[in-house]
Image (cartoon, rainbow, N blue to C red; front, top):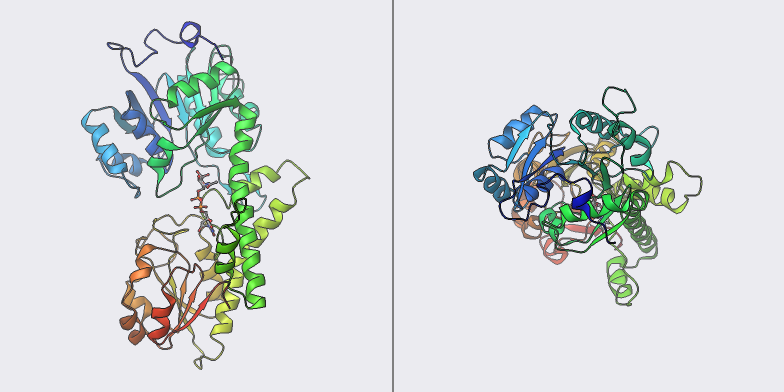
Length: 449
Ligand code: SAJ
């Protein structure tokens, strides 16, 4: 598309690549798993960035040069940006050329509707600072139509009449650039993945592309706001459905005495088949949540709802398997040790983790549950965690719920000697089962009975 952005609304210093120009300023709202890396990438790619968060402690930690969570490569970006004074965190937004909203959109678990209050509060917080020619980019995941219906009226000042009304697509540019990075590999994915940018008009999308092109090496595809909103939800929903299928296959295989892991590996040798892995359920802030944003305004969804049901039911299924495995353990006070509460391997993130559901269900059934997770610190999870020896002391069964790389290399003999009865249930198929078996453990694996 051939649109001259500079001549339309851009302030004279807009083209930051020109030598001698002053730096453009970006205000990023939300310094979480997506907002902070995004802010720091811009701060290391020619922009002056102010990162805003309502959590004062988080703001102070970041301004001291420390990260509020682990993410490979992020510390170096923070240190660099601080050294060059291109980044500062604050609790209040201020005037900028570009505003990026990267706040969470949780699910209201009762209504199963997207809880937009953070997005609305973020939009309200920047509205008084927006000027003619500014660009507002929403990274937060939202149900289709949300930006036009809920965000733009706030940015235009229509909601409370307090601000001088600015017209989106005439005086302010509005775009949606949904994040696509995976925790644990966020920076690399932010830089190398293709991005989708939807605009309220073509100009907004192109302006968004121009901004992100400063650090994105993947292709940037422009489209409308609604298509971009839909694409993001379709991506995560397709993954949820694929995992649900893998989980259903695992249950069928358990019943039929087939090794599902071998079967999936072989099925995936077909050039057009790519079945994901079964497991104890789906966690994280996205895949367990986003499919509901697609179903909330329609009566047409079926497979999406069913897949959510299957994946949400996996902790129950794993517990049934563990119960069956322990039925011959003679003690009335059975003890279980959960290995891994992060929602997936090699990260410290426990949001929406299926481990929590498993633990609550097991405790309700009378099991005494201990937890070991080499990535998660005490205080980061709803339940207390223990060091490895305390966690396995007198235990009757280890239940592996997360595929952390450390679990491949555990002191199996020492663990054996500390436990009361030696059972291990691997819901991720991530251990060297032969080693555990040879040390005297009864081993069971999800989808491999
Ligand atoms: N899981 C399985 N089996 C698999 C793969 C994953 O049970 O074969 C489970 C994981 O253990 C975890 C959950 O699914 O509990 C989700 O993990 P994930 O690695 O699939 O995804 P997330 O939630 O960390 O990140 C996803 C990514 N989306 C896609 O891959 C389509 C990421 O690119 C998005 O940016 C992110 O959601 C997001 O923020 O939307």
